[in-house]
Length: 301
Image 1: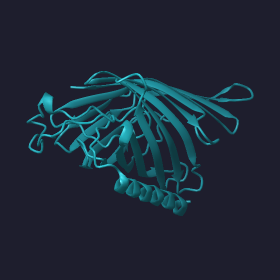
Image 2: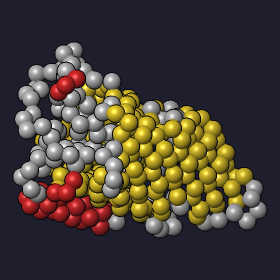
Image 3: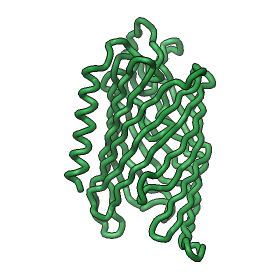
Image 4: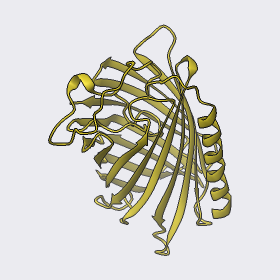
């Protein structure tokens, strides 16, 4: 299983490299728009010497959908991203699970021109599993989710250019109740690649490797995530962008099922610092959640 997942990861990397080589030389912003002719030198700005408002890069939150932006928060600025409400329905092996989550703020702080730090507080959650035949409740839990710490480092293409690349290491700290949390510290690294193409298209290729814990036997295993997505402004609007992506997750543990989903989302830019979004994820195999729907907001300060 690990060999297959590793080959899939290598395949995504090969495709990403090939597309990078043929990407046009014309610069594109994250949302597909053409940036200013000259990008100012912002290398000297820090958390304590913020980037001036008139030099901020395009606002590109890590939502909706599961793909991450390659862009970091400008030095000295703060971004808040959050679901407003999210609901998920799963059904497998005679058990139906419904979960609801309200507010999961992700606070991002720009430290330098090329790096930010992030703290995500998974919000109030309610999870209930029922027997599909009798309807009897098997498990029910309510509480706040785990805390996730991340840092994002942009390697190139932060402001403009035909491509961008970032590295995002993270760690999950167990801070919730059983059922909602497995009670284990888990970590991983995410690597998104953005390709800015003609006609305002943005292609995202992302790979991720996680170190997860099997709570039944107490040992750790590698989990591999791969994603390919495309986004484009919606016809007739200069504020709305639509996204579509294919997502896969495959664990090296034989007991960890492969998960495949088709994800769609849309964001609407209220102004240069505020974005509303909505999305839906549809399971493509039995192990994946049948459907997840959510709406959220992102704001930059």
